[in-house]
Image (cartoon, rainbow, N blue to C red):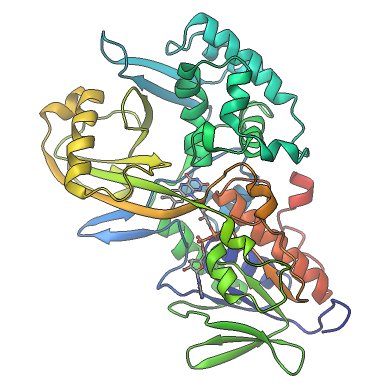
Length: 464
Ligand SMILES: Cc1cc2nc3c(=O)[nH]c(=O)nc-3n(C[C@H](O)[C@H](O)[C@H](O)COP(=O)(O)OP(=O)(O)OC[C@H]3O[C@@H](n4cnc5c(N)ncnc54)[C@H](O)[C@@H]3O)c2cc1C
């Protein structure tokens, strides 16, 4: 390696989550010989499936939005778009239990009108806010639209204070801003960076009319991120090794990288390190970052999924969001799980700090009655199975100031690149961020290897 340029064409990608898979595909598509190393027995990282008897279970419900252009590119690249379709038009049923008179249904949906009118009718009719609150939400949305996302000062402020300063009542924060924000940022407004929150709301709700249309896998996540990703990697010529944990990365005497796995040392011109931030910290060779300990200052946030199998159908919609109850979002997973009788619901609880370590019995006592309050048919139904999946470090915590801590893809070590949803993509910890980071790492590596980028590769710059 000289002058930051490397010669040759071998790359090793460490980590088979969405960031690593993307980087491996992009490099292989450019003609680089790629080995992808994943410590676990499967690809997909934080978005995966497992078997529980006859049931195929996702570790956590995942959704994406139409504005997630990189993840949509990824789905196309692995020939999976048809398996994770988008709604034709944003439509979120929101059930409120807070009113003494009982359940009340509202909807967040869009009309075929330009921004911001596309949400105007829905907001005007949103029954979970007073007229005054709805008008104030409209004004805050316009103020949010005017924020300059390139202003680093935004990242230092918290979203909750900004909302309060812009006339948002606690009820408006709960019934609207947190309803969307907690699910997308994995933090309540008070704990979230204004920069990241503004990015999410501007991109999702205030850019293109269809930007917030929701998509989700109609098959198990593993079908997409493991089986079909693996198929695409194989066709692209990537050597993929699962159950292969990298123990060190160091420069060798020939100016290449030596990537150590049990029983083998791989030699590479370029290495993409696409693992979580704490693991990146442990694997980075000395001098690769000015202050590697900053990676450890990036906090993490949990997501809990509560899974309930009923002996009969209790919900007719594919999903809904809830207010006035600890329940946040509920998805029907019956068809995708392979369940033949009854109905399987997944309750997705973001920023689940209070529940993440609670015993299953306590979660059962807490969530089953709430589901019965939300879904009258669940009151009569029998519960055939109840279990939880806990992801204690589901995402990085999008706290104010986190932007300063997120490194870019390039390190100070030529030929060594970082990827992962937690790197500086401008997005919160999402599948979109992971794919973008993988593309950026591949782009940087291709530049250094002197290889042209594949024409079909997603263009992070152009999309920004
Ligand atoms: C429950 C849950 C719900 C979520 N919901 C959504 C959602 O609705 N929408 C959305 O967009 N995002 C969601 N996310 C976030 C999304 O899943 C992640 O942001 C994304 O999958 C991260 O991908 P990644 O490749 O950056 O990292 P990871 O998925 O963490 O991949 C890193 C990989 O590196 C491997 N690895 C680590 N160390 C080594 C080593 N030494 N050697 C070899 N391999 C190693 C790991 O095993 C892992 O497979 C959710 C996450 C969770 C957990």
